[in-house]
Length: 104
Image (cartoon, rainbow, N blue to C red):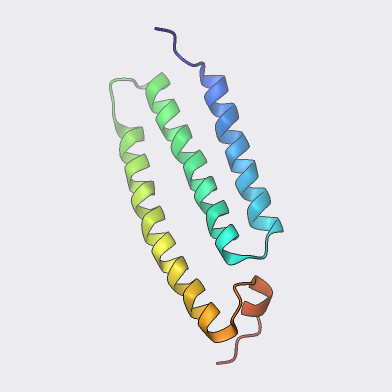
């Protein structure tokens, strides 16, 4: 059974990371920005799993870090969606520009 080379996995991870960075810096919709942050976290997860497989195949440290990041990402998504819903209720928009002129 042939294994996928590490360079191919790192290329996919790098592509996901830069797509996430592009989406985070160019979009104004908060949901799109949240999806971009999730892409960034998933690219890091791919790196952890790939390096765990190729450098330390008998250990599970990379898998444990990945599980931790997935847990944190789920909590981050829940909090971010709650903030987005609150912003939409107060401004009828989820645009980032509308969030800067909130009234307290």
